[in-house]
Length: 143
Image 1 (tube, one colour):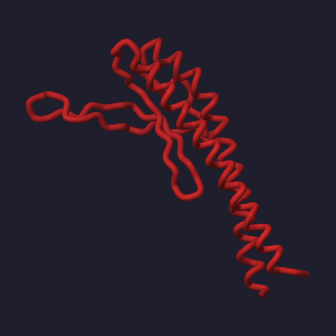
Image 2 (cartoon, rainbow, N blue to C red; image 1 turned 60 degrees about the vertical axis):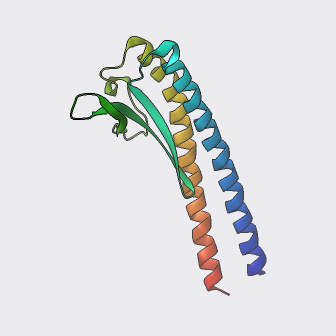
Image 3 (spheres, rainbow, N blue to C red; image 1 turned 90 degrees about the vertical axis):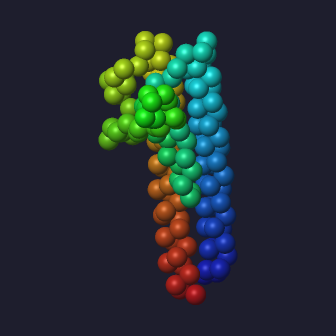
């Protein structure tokens, strides 16, 4: 068996998985930008937002409550995200967005299923990538 060729093809598969993860990341980033435009349309303040963070080969998509940090005089210094806890199914039910306006809740309910699907696909992508990486490591030991 040509182990070196096998390893090379496995590494190409890992790179292809990374490229497919980049497509999902780009989609999530586009959704975030669209959500933010709609949430702040008309000069309204958004109570909730989500961020897309790439951490190595994986991506985290998390909803957060936007909490203002105030100076001693009471004026807002900056806004800090306080991340919400995610369900076991990697989705956020509408009930965790406690003080969202009806308009904001409608947007959240519209975007969350799409984000949940992306999270699910990213989880599968990571699992396959880990499996391939393990095979590469084990195959290199045979050389």
